[in-house]
Amino acid sequence: MDSIIGLKSNVFLAPMAGITDYPFRKLVASKGKANLYSEMVAVNAINRKNPKTYRIADVRQEPYPVIVQLVGNDASLFSEAAKLAADLGAYSLDINMGCPVRKIVNNESGSALMKDMPRAAKIIEATVKATPLKVSVKFRKGWDNNSVNAVEFAKMCEESGASFITVHGRTRAQGYSGVADWDIIRQVKEAVKIPVIGNGDVVSVETAEKLLKQTNADGVMVGRGSLGNPWLLGQIHEYLQNKILPRDISVGEIKEALLQQLNDMVSFYGKEMAVAISRKYVCWYSKNLRDAKKFREIYTRIYDYDEAVKAIEAYFSKREQGDE
Image (cartoon, rainbow, N blue to C red; front, side, top):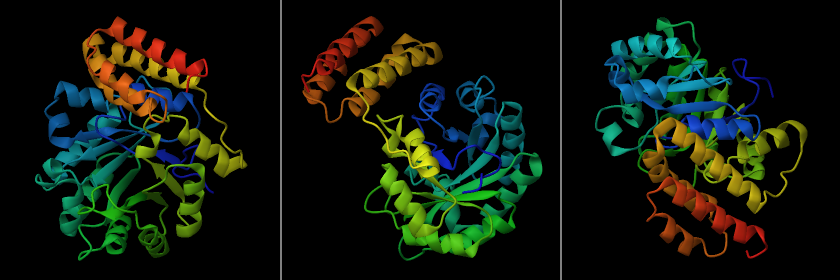
């Protein structure tokens, strides 16, 4: 596969709100090759210099390329936000036209833009014009099964200046339920000349390979499959490039990854917030291990950082000793 916009991998970590922050990106980057995205950055908030949003968009300290994703509904705000994101170290920019969350959609942003192609086109054109950075667009199969317009939408993105596009094979109405329609990704790939990234139900090296074969897409995007498994993207990259099958990850490695992430979250958010955020990660990392439910119940009642580290050490060390 050819490299997409100069990136070293054709495996992409999906932008996920509340997930793909600096500590998670750093962890995924340490486990193998993959292209990394920021959490979505609201264009109105970054233009107001909202401190929290500004921090999400600031990727200058990271030694690997980060694609910064913008979300909103106003072309002029996108134009300004694109310039700010470029100054804050973005490698390239992505426009979110696929988020199905009600709060985003009610603001006529995310997947709501699939119902308003003229507005979507203006946003892409304004963003492309604002900076020399490459601009991509992430969108869905359509709003619902009665308005599947991914092919037309893809053509509009290409005409408006997008460098590549990512297609999630579900409609907005589906959210994250049901099965992703990879056939629509294939149809999009056949309709445009720019690179197409396939997204939806990629949870292993096998599903990544299958999606690429079925759709002829130029790359794959991994979202929920990476939760509790920061190794997955690097494994997919190695398999697609060199046919190296993934090795089993030990319980000890899971423990170290979780502790590394917790430690980086402390540096980024402070101890109290890091412990609160780490609860969801503990659930993902302990999945399929013995007594996970009991451990999760204990961990969700922990507020102190030192206590959190002790609980992680104790639980995973016990599993390491063969009590799985």
